[in-house]
Length: 119
Image 1 (cartoon, rainbow, N blue to C red):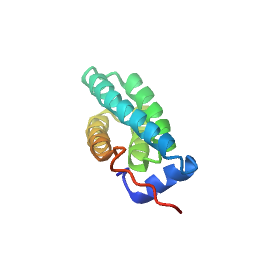
Image 2 (tube, rainbow, N blue to C red):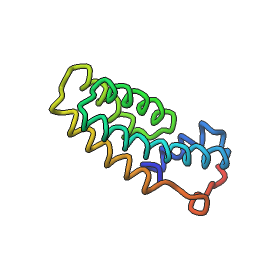
Image 3 (cartoon, rainbow, N blue to C red):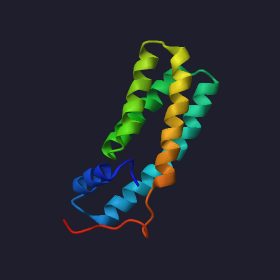
Image 4 (cartoon, one colour):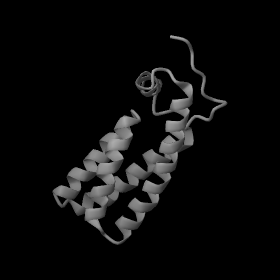
């Protein structure tokens, strides 16, 4: 599931209960998360904090659109840490964010699992 049923409900509402659109968005977001995981890992290894900030900013926007609030908040926090030059905390947060993205991806709903109930 997407973090919680209420988050999925929020996404459904944004998509006017259009099942195909929700499924397409979840699929695209799932792919984006796997790319973010790789890019954040690479940027972290090279200590490219400008890139980490940029990735965090983009991830915060995408995750907010998807109602993935845990990822959204962590990505916003990552941007704040980059701005404040809190480099020691950035590595820890990237690890936590990666776990959260992996959790989201592991729980992404397939077409067979997703059931839209009439409201």
